[in-house]
Length: 345
Image (cartoon, rainbow, N blue to C red; front, side, top):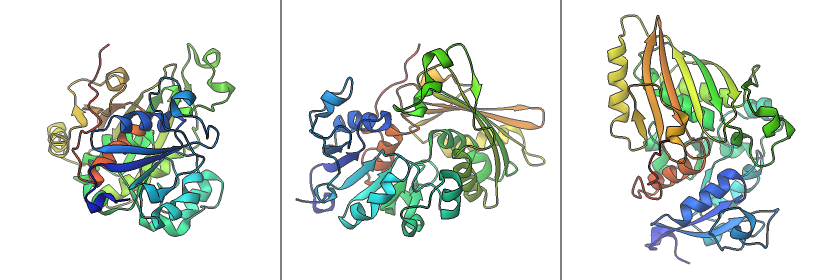
């Protein structure tokens, strides 16, 4: 079959792990994408069933296989548990596919960090140097040439977009505090009893106070943006809503830097970006629900800059961001397949 580079009319995409929240979101978005042909969906637990049969609300009639055959597609978008994409990525790459990993396997460039945070040896350490941490607004040049792309985590996306311009332009010290609230869908479809409605209703709970897996991602990315080591203190909280993230980021402006200068820098970086919207008031998570938008506000309290970032953890934090990266990697229309508008209320 023709590869995309041979002039095929549509980019042929496979989704590996199509029955989790992120994978099912990918199936829905790619199935409606005007420049994509969704050709395969895999699921080990649901192999032999159609996606429509296996996932509520799906209109995809593809029968799922246990594994993806990358010889039949141009791109594999993987939404698999930690360690699983890395076991398969080398084969997919050898078969000629570009790999976009929604999971955590290629986010950290240091295999020792991976061992520390995931409690196991990395399954494919030789691939770590090839992977690009793909945040479209801040690393477009690297995305354009990459064969292996790793999406930042949902919290990481909110924090890096929130802090990026201040660090890139040297306007803030490389020491960041991030306080974030997330809906419970971030725990996935196999979550344990601590995520039951009766456990989470009418309460807010901090967790991973001693360290969350997204913190080293934030430090790695923010250090690269600041061109020096950036320390991050990050505490996530679970709140009783299905989806959404609000991250409040605290930065210290460098001497003589005004709030107007900081806001001007954010406008320079983001005004031409279709999926970042700057707000006069702190954004609500509901505004981003079901969309690929990240909403940001920039304020100051005493000697601290306060940047509030809101996005959909299952959309901009996972499936729709993967589609945005795919569009950028293959020079497709930037908003193709991502036209969902904000809804209020």
